[in-house]
View 1 (cartoon, rainbow, N blue to C red):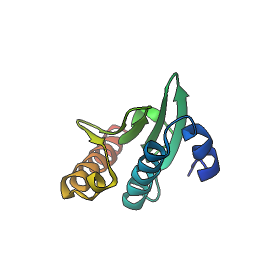
View 2: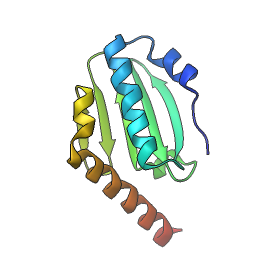
View 3: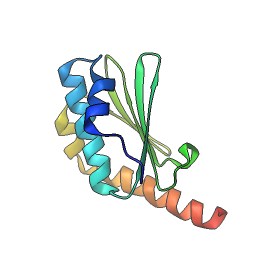
Amino acid sequence: MQRASKTELRKFLGAFSPEIARVALRARAFVLEEAPLAHELVSDVRDTVVMRYSFTERPDDAFCRIAVNAESVDLGLVHDHVRIEQLDDLRQPRVGRLLRAAMKERKIGRKEGA
């Protein structure tokens, strides 16, 4: 399983406010708590850091992504996205349900299509 170190992530996120960086790291922890075996691919595209999570090493198989920019943190799922404006947003039950549904869809789709 590939995963960026917290030091690497903090370097990427250093361009953002401490609050945005803190929310981004907590969103990452939220995803990895639900999917501890997920691969993580981190990229820095213009003014946005994107973290993709997949059960394979292929970015196209990602079940979710966290996009971080100077103004927001977005948790993008297979068919939805959730704006994470504060840490309490991650505690909403619907966020976990959406994440688990996206993971399930990618796992099932991968098995059928493999």
